Image (cartoon, rainbow, N blue to C red; front, side, top):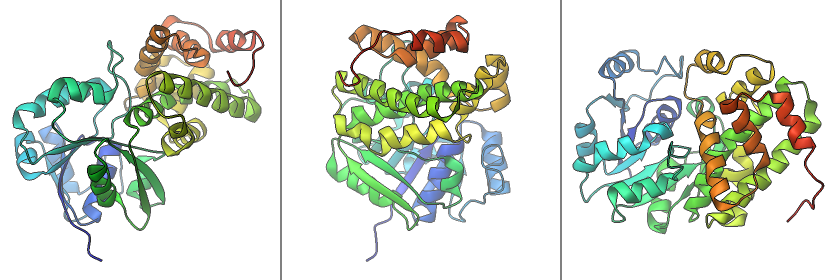
Length: 336
């Protein structure tokens, strides 16, 4: 059975945006990948790869690269935003005057807005209103593996079930599964907080604490994500799925995760700013840790791991002292 093909604009040419554009173009869709830098657009067009983030992986022949946002929106019927969370609202304001009734909007960004700690869908509502279709794409996926066509899966969550299905079908490939759901809040919370916990897991390994500590941290981290999500109105079962437990395990255990690598460096006593510079890409968990901690405090949600990582990253607490603070917490029931 022949699937419909769509005109899709992917906004953001980092590693994840590029990988998704490659996947969608490989599925036969008419895809334009937008970067805000004309020099990068020209370079990628000539090289037919993203040498900065996914070197050695060639683009599908049909994938177009553009630095002209207006042209991309004229071309597209589906817009997929894949920019760092700190410029997510800025991207929304840039596309707002260019939007047409034909457009449906999705995002694969993970994180909270700096300063306001708002979730992504809240920013969409504030900037664009509720008329435009909205969906979030998230899951345990490293960009390079998706671009290499290794097996993987994501969830597409939207209050618009038909759009969730449409986008899932667009993403689905013989090596890539896309599931649908409606819990936008849960998917966004899982995608944001797992980055903070991956820094914690990396720090524990950097300190040499071993597999037992890593497993305990992942399990207790999942409890933190779930508590925050439920307080914000998410469904508990979301956090046992791809965008909760799945993404958490991925980022906490594999060194392809930038957040985990930063945690390793911190645990080994390296300077945080230098470690971020060495990684060379945005480490979302750094800013997100502050936003999640502030949000949790405002809601009265207990998130001790997040709190200690926030203190390490932003207040100069040593990783060893952070661990000591966690271990000295009073005995409590595991599930309460």
